[in-house]
Amino acid sequence: MNSIKTYWLPAIFILFASCSEHIVVSDADSLGLRFKVKSMSESFYIAYSSFNSIVLHRKIYRHNYQFYHDCRYRSVEKIFYCNTLPCDSISCDSIAGASKSDSVKTYFPHAFKEPGYYFVNYNYVSDSLTTLEFFDEHGNQTDYINRKYGNKRLLSEEKYSVANGLISKSGYWYDSKNKLTNKTTFYKNGYRETAYAYAAGEKYETGDEYNYRYTFDIHGRISNKKTYRGISFVSETCYYYNDYGDIISVHETDRDGIIKKNIYDYEYDSSNNWTTCVEYHSTGNIFVRRREITYYN
Image (tube, rainbow, N blue to C red):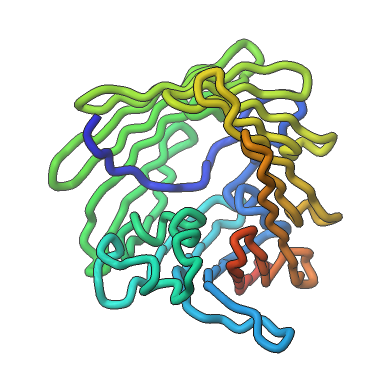
């Protein structure tokens, strides 16, 4: 299949999954935000440790979010810092400035694949239709997405390029319990399909190349994920959380028994939203995310 242009966007609809899986009820919730957030700016840095302190080395991105009172997106602005060259033409070393910089590309591929800037405006036409408009740094509209809903479920999604027309169409199917069972995306040159099945406290996801088995804790959070390529085991990932519900540790074991462990430290504001997250990556790299959050009164 030819290379397909896609966007990463947090889900803006309620996800109906297994009875033990956490249900995402709003855009703010999908970002792990608590209380009624009006706006948030999040910056991502590569950092290093110096004399028992964390020093920010290079900024990779900044995301600016605006929310309505009901915690839906008003707009999302994404800015990626890739010096003065296109992201795809920059080597890992020029961004990370470290011998272990190859892991940065693996950890955060968006810094190397996404455009340097785009702005997304959300138009809620009705309860059954939402349109997302994408703009470049000059304010020119480049793409748009139409999403159709029914009974609070996403039913279909169409992506268009202003210059070239329709890019893709996606359909979503559910069972009698409103659990998502299938997502199929059609392109000009083919399609991609993902199927979902459920058991007590578990969800199974079958894709074109990889399959996943998720296990959830009593709070509906993912506690374990097993990855398979076909029927061959690839890895197992375990997730651990703090009292705020944020991930503090991720342990991944591959088929050879090699363990990778990432540790997360947080600082919180008075509304129990984290404002700084420091990740100590298994490769030895350190990543820092900082958030500036404002709230509705």
